[in-house]
Length: 252
Image (cartoon, rainbow, N blue to C red; front, side, top):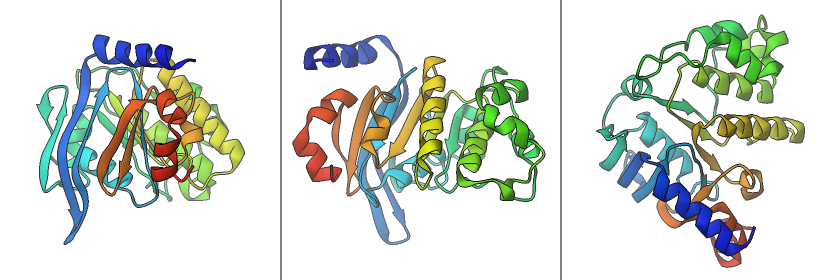
């Protein structure tokens, strides 16, 4: 794909699709240690946006701030036109934002199926596009494991379960925080196939990753974060061609 084609595709996304999630000027901190400094990004309906940066750049903090796990010191998180900043995590989840945390946070003493059932709820408009049957169809790896305890799963199996749990909530947007981290290559491939499948269904995804190569072929656009600030926004192809940005901020 040449540069002009990539730019045209990026413009098409921005021009034709509504903004679903609009994050502006977020400051977030752990106690007295500030991590985000005016962090901003926008996500369009149906796109996959990659949030890229080195370890410690602020990717997870951005995701937690959007999901309500952290309360930003200032800034705005507008979802489908509604201000979410300062809302409780359960309010944000019910509004339609599904969060897959980096540490997965499954229930180790519950079976796979119970982990899925416990997250079942309709979407913000009452839609039930995702149920147990469809989650098993999308994640066939879980089907033979449905009676296994969550704590007995491998890291990759737990990651699949966590994504399935998020889908059971029928979200309008899914936040995936470092889904490939620490997984064997075969599981990284399977997670990539799952994300690609969700993208083909028109799911809106924000994908936080350190690994640019994992995002190639998955993401439409990229935001690069460094020291809690957005230092690049553009198509994933334009980023892949920008050797200076990759070297300076992604250690590529």
